[in-house]
Image 1 (tube, rainbow, N blue to C red):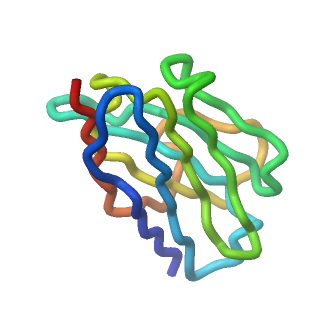
Image 2 (cartoon, rainbow, N blue to C red):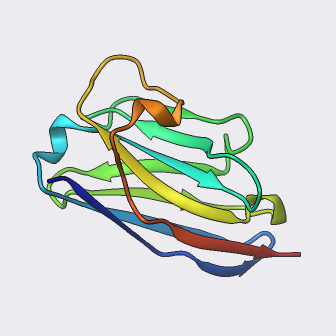
Length: 125
């Protein structure tokens, strides 16, 4: 059974940086696309970024383009989200998601079969 475990969240001042990690287990990682979503209190899941199986293709939400970078290390079964120039509006629980279906990178939460438990990111002003 596929399992995803996020880490790296915390409290940071506006303008600061954090790197989130997501450890994948229970499958062959390089056969799964991966993505990051976030959910602020009282809001729905919001797409942040996605990455293809090889890492050669990425997709970002407009709100994070130029500030966030998604990457993966298939040898370490881990996907990362480097977050720079953080803003208070980035405050949310961040979730890692994965799915074995290839093709164009998808931004809908329903397109991903496996989810982690989330890690909290708080950006103070």
